[in-house]
Length: 235
Ligand SMILES: C[S@@+](CC[C@H](N)C(=O)[O-])C[C@H]1O[C@@H](n2cnc3c(N)ncnc32)[C@H](O)[C@@H]1O
Image 1 (cartoon, rainbow, N blue to C red):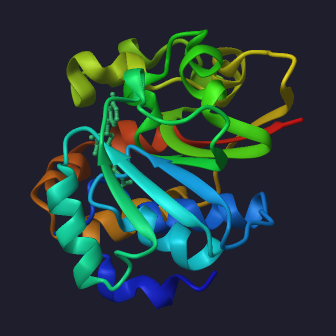
Image 2 (image 1 turned 180 degrees about the vertical axis):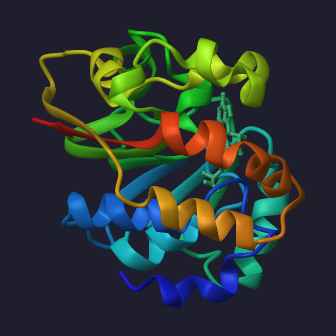
Image 3 (image 1 turned 180 degrees about the horizontal axis):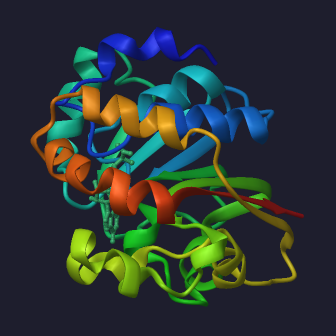
């Protein structure tokens, strides 16, 4: 994947945090997928659809772009403007009550969103697994704490994140949270390499929230946090 193919789409208008296209690039490079045009994949918590665009172009699959805070109408207008409306279908649904057919998706992506709704052990098995086809792959990239600070996110990050600090879990902890099931073949979690790039591109965007994050970067974000990569493969 060539990140520069997406430069014109990456702006303060479409970004909702550190560069999600850069996070997706690392996930796709580390865990290559053999998808084709007949496959359907889910972009869960797609926000303004930047990741949905990259997923559609890089995998060739049909994308269901689901989000809670951004309406399907808003995303439909953006996808039409980007010329991907025939390949990417916007949906407005809560990840806790997904309205999809069982075993529908050949892959599931969730960038900078899975931590908002899935940090309870049992969530993956109950709310996500039923919708995944046999052999499906799940790629997740989310902010968390480094393994060295596992379990200390509220103590270390509340000044920056307030009452959302608990959502920041370590790669080791995310492996436990995803859990086990007879349909799961492997769960890999790691501290992602794209951390500096993704944050730099967020600060360069000029987004008003980026200014707020920058104040905490050197003292809290860089020393204690990481992006957690998660790759789940089904049998
Ligand atoms: C920081 S944004 C990231 C959006 C996008 N993936 C990206 O990286 O640009 C987090 C997204 O998670 C979504 N989200 C939070 N809770 C959700 C839930 N319960 N169900 C579906 N989406 C949810 C929000 O709607 C929001 O757009």
